[in-house]
Amino acid sequence: MKILVIGSGGREDAFLWKFQKEENVEKIYISPGHSAMERFSKVSLLGKKDHAELLSFALENKIDLTVVGPEAPLTQGLSDLFSANGLKLFGPHEAAAKLEGSKIFSKHFMKRHGIPTAKYETYQSYDEALVGLRNWPVEEQGIVIKADGLAGGKGVVVAHDRAQSEQTLHDFMVNDKVSVKSDEILFEAVLPGEEVSAFALCHGEEFFFLGCACDHKRVFDNDEGPNTGGMGCFHSPSWPDQQLVEKIKEQVLKKTLKGLQSEGTPFSGFLFMGLMIDEKSDPYVVEYNVRMGDPETQTLFPLLKGNLSQSLLALLNNEPLKSRDLSLEELCSVHVVMTSGGYPSIDDTPLELGHTIQGTDSVEGHLFLAGVGHNDSGDLINRGGRVLGVTALGATIEEARELAYQDIAKIDFKAKHYRRDIGQKERGQGR
Ligand code: AMP
Ligand code: GLY
Image (cartoon, rainbow, N blue to C red; front, side, top):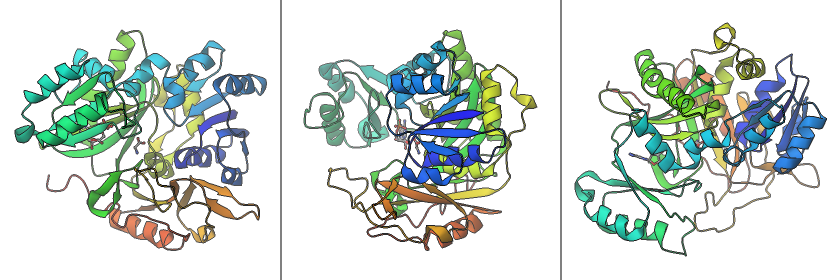
């Protein structure tokens, strides 16, 4: 089988690592990718291509399966284009990708289908929203203010203070100096509990529940500093436990797939359910993403047993997944991300890039490369915010953590940064 992967980060590196081990896979192309991805024997780098160029490439080269890492190509209709031309792409059509592309669409969708989520209000004008905000018990209960549409993680503010919430509303709807801009605004109640992300491979109402992982989004230890794409992640087979996983399947996953099917926009692809688990151990949806997570993919794939490429193609061919041999190993996994100095650069100061990366050859766990490239002498250098990550497995989170940090200590580049506390605060304690 010939596979085309779209993207260029650590998540896509993990897809390549998984696919290149599968005997049925003859060749893998990656666009845009990064130069270090060709360290995998079957992989060729295509560089940047627009949708029309990707389509011609896939048709000319008889690509059997296309897998999309990031959300943007999906919300922009790449899956529609490929399927209209008879190609198999594992990712939702534009209509179903709206689940991630519009937070307001996804809230209305959840309400229509009785999927548990925080109570909310939406407004289409600043003046009306300001009245709504003045009637909201901000001091007592807090408020989550969300800009509609994709905002690269900058469009959500959780506030417990009236002045801050009014400033946020003004910034999102009126202030031209702020990059986030939204004509429609969403207010949500603050959900208490513990956050976890759940992942499934889906096609119509058929699915394979992949597993759960907990991301660490803030840049510094103890969840301090600005939000990032993800600084590290862990998976434990003991939390969410089987009972909670069943609730997630019944109350969230099945209802979501059934709802989309009934509205004539069936979902095909990876579904990422961002959840809050309350003190009664009930799941509430915080957000949907229509793709795998980064770094959740790097955390879960080293545990994934079975043939992924065959399973994805089987799903796309409407074959039931029960017969597929896909499972998650019963081990803990910890993934630690290393970033460039200055990341996430919320004030747009330049990152410290172009430094030689040493020590990657000594890594014993799984090394995934993201924001990297090569200089003229052929040395590996950092070229982006999130540079690389290491995943280690263990019988316990402590064991996996220790192994991951042993590997991280071997890697060096100027102005590197990483969190020291990934996986330290396990979820589900005291239940
Ligand atoms: P989102 O982009 O919608 O996932 O929001 C980003 C982050 O904001 C989430 O990962 C949560 O940590 C937090 N968040 C969003 N909505 C809520 C909510 N209703 N209650 C509590 N925290 C929230
Ligand atoms: N790690 C969060 C995400 O991929 O959106």
